[in-house]
Length: 277
Image 1 (cartoon, helix red, strand yellow):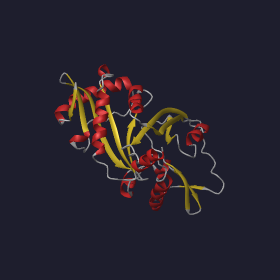
Image 2 (cartoon, rainbow, N blue to C red):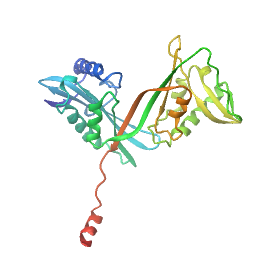
Image 3 (cartoon, rainbow, N blue to C red):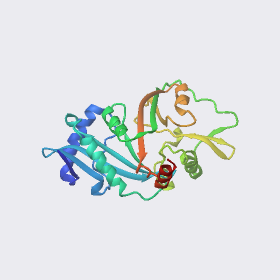
Image 4 (cartoon, rainbow, N blue to C red):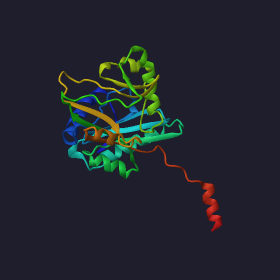
């Protein structure tokens, strides 16, 4: 039993086999493979008797509120769980993240563990991670007889025009940048490249200002279910808002975090405390 670095495409077949086995137990959760433009040190393989039984990786980004995130993700072959592979991979990737810190004011390690992954959740909790926020998916059936809700007095829902997009893009950033709930904005060109089905969008205007907006996308030809995603910790209580509109929670996806490095003790304070005794 041991760890080694990712050896490249020669490892991919075994990693994919382990990933499929983990998905069969854990359900429809995000289990990333070795793809992506990552340095070798950001990917680790767990072995047992020369066979790959686990894979881990470290992703890094900066969120709009200044949080520098080091996200640790991975999986272990179900028949080899409980033997320390997950702990060993987590510690190795945490140590690597510690060499990358840029000195940003908020540097955190992150991890994901859905309800179907009690082992992963306990591993994170045992290493000091705590829930920072929870992404929530809700859904409701779509009926042909559904009527659009009446707009709030003083607001006007207008069709989306090409000249609206710069202001819509800016409104999105304004709504979420300071939320400290994991938001990462995209530049305008990236936003505009993904624009489609704007006839399904609802943008409410208060005079010349955008007051609120909802984006909708159509998946497939027949639409029988509407789904929406929000964050449980949203201060505007959006989960309760959507539940009042007939939506039901179908999935919760917690993001766990802990500081990249524990705060160092204040030695001056310790010396003073000893002297005072």
